[in-house]
Image (cartoon, rainbow, N blue to C red; front, side, top):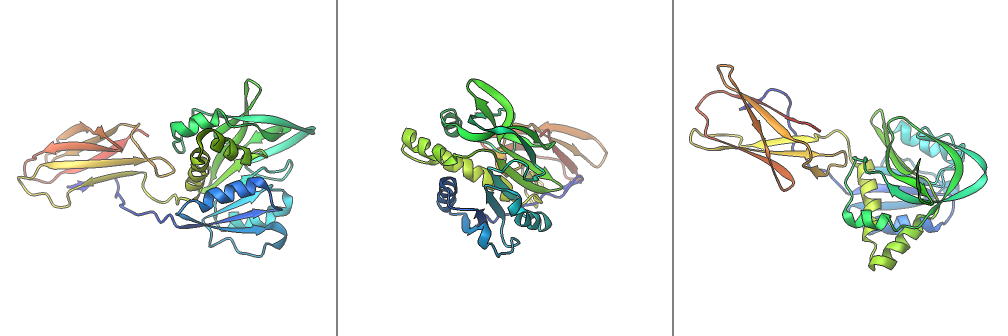
Length: 301
């Protein structure tokens, strides 16, 4: 059999990534993020201070900039030049970010709780994390006007009192293939503390950090839709296909339907729908008459 629509890649993602975290000064949010990353076996964390920064960013899979302001612009520019994904934590107003323009109205801070955007689809989060987020305490955000770039994918919105606002707390963006993320707020460390107070572990907090890092650092040049079958099929051998669909964080998903059209030598076509089994899809065709066939598989993702 041959595939007349595309070549499907079987590849292994190397998760041993180097992450650079640059801050202006020691801060409890930096400590919370650092401890979370250092608990993950797939990442190596390097920390540095802005005023002592003398590195090239090219070896890193992700750069995290804490309390970003215009003095960090040279580091951000180097990330953009070298196509290195970055995560901005608590950017200052009028800092010149493309992802969000924060125009401070008055010298005032809001207490903003996180509210999950159920339309977010870049990666999945567990029920444990969802439940934890509803109890995470407020972070300090600027009383400001927020203009977020087109195409931004918001995971968490600001919630002030009982009102969920359109302003984000955590969102992600991808421009010309370069991924970025922005966390707006000061006091992320309180989320980690609350997680431990309620669960006696840091699982939910660590999941939020790890899922964000995984989405940003994973390479975008691999197939999101993969089809597997036998390489050589004998005349009396039943034919089976397995399909896998991935979201943009390369997590297996089974929400979309997967279909296949098979065409024989006479031009006759046969339509099939895969069944969902666990984290993948299966299609058992059984036996086909000897001959030459082509197939095209699609997913509605």
